[in-house]
Length: 277
Image 1 (tube, rainbow, N blue to C red):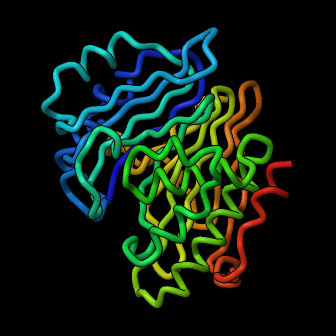
Image 2 (image 1 turned 180 degrees about the horizontal axis):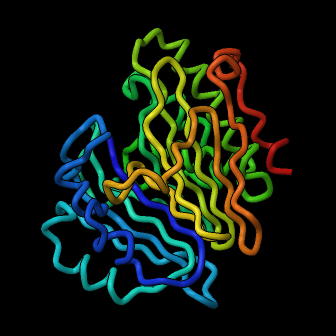
Image 3 (image 1 turned 30 degrees about the vertical axis):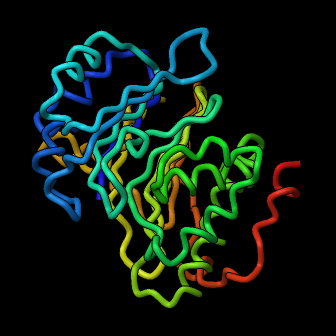
């Protein structure tokens, strides 16, 4: 699996969390404590929002994070009040720049640590969830990118949490219908340049780890803590989400529960058109 960081708060340089800490994301790319894979060397990516621009900037590379000297220079010089960083451990799809996270569409940005059951069994059905309006943006082969585009089709622009719930429930139904024992694991982050949403959920298995550190209205959300002192890191429970909006307190709210996803009807399509209205 992968490791990632999402930050929302005052404008800072990306290196404060990406490269500087004792257990930074770059260190985790070589030595992850809590991931299913110790090494996350199948590429990396960063995404950030800049003042006055509606769409995020992206930097992706197929080399491991620990071997790219450009990463340290960029992380030191780029400043942002909302950014993502991700190191990838591939789960069956090629190591290409198009498959590196985060993914972006318009003002939205998305990254994921997880899996959608046995992707080979449900890939065609998940891709069928992507409306024509967004299918042209499908440039990679990962389940994560497909899920993101399906969420856009399910009404992400107007109802981010509802779109995530509808999409995850439907895919959980497809996973159940496929007969696989492989779980659906959805530990993911979404942002639109203003608000940040992070989710921790699983169906048919244990959820991947997620932690939150708050400092006033600022928040950093991570796959695993960036230092060895766990006292200021809060574990986000499964079936929960964290919502960080500018100028408002950080919220931790319920998301889907496993039993709710189990009620998904795999033969029933997600109400995409209704959700987008």
